[in-house]
Image (cartoon, rainbow, N blue to C red; front, side, top):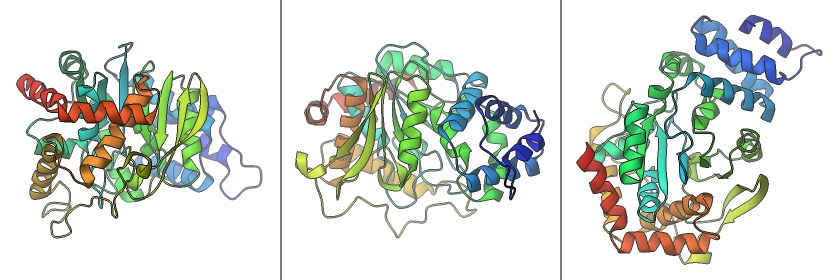
Length: 354
């Protein structure tokens, strides 16, 4: 089914318009990834979906269509947690998911972060930026990513390496200049058998994202509304989330005060350092270096807001994995990983492989 026919089903401005059923949504997203549709048709479809709003069934079909075309590493790997932050990144708060992932890996969880860099329209800092600042990197090769996780407990992969058509859609995303279903689907390119820690923007999308995670059949997972839709909870006030446990969805609220980790303000990116390079299309090298230094300080045990937030993020990963039954247990295990240098050891093992 072509996108033109699907858009007739959606019925822009017509009373007989309706949501897509599963088969229609699956065919529509398959058509987008096929390369046979024009950028104008794709852009129109994405905007129309944004205006209408997304259903759990539509997003589930989109995600399955993408997974069928992607080469996803670590399929059926036991004990894996997939960390899925927003791929267009952060422009106000530092992306701390790398620190949280390394801490969780140091506590014995297998961690795979899905990321990319310079993704429009936001083009914010991502895990890829942080890893570069640390002197390591993420890979475009799914087999290499799987090898990293097997040998070190931690890996990071570019989603456009797993699903190259996503790179071809970047100009459409730049021109549309708003979040579309692509922003959700690319966060769901994870192994079916893994647990998920998924970032969601503020508002009602939290429940939708949790419903999609459940519909995709993941055994465990947590969707959380961290700052800027990130996977790391805030340290100023409560962060809302939903946990998938034994196929059931239950509310999960992260209160930093409960663990002695509350601060008066969130860690922020330095205002004196522009987010992007002189062309406005890539990461600012100076800011990449700052993010590497900030993450290294957290792993070295520096007491600050970044450490507190990273511990909360690691506790979510540990809880999603099932290794920690409560967030308090996760905080204890994460703190031990930092204090013993286990998290830093994971980073050194990763460096040795690269």
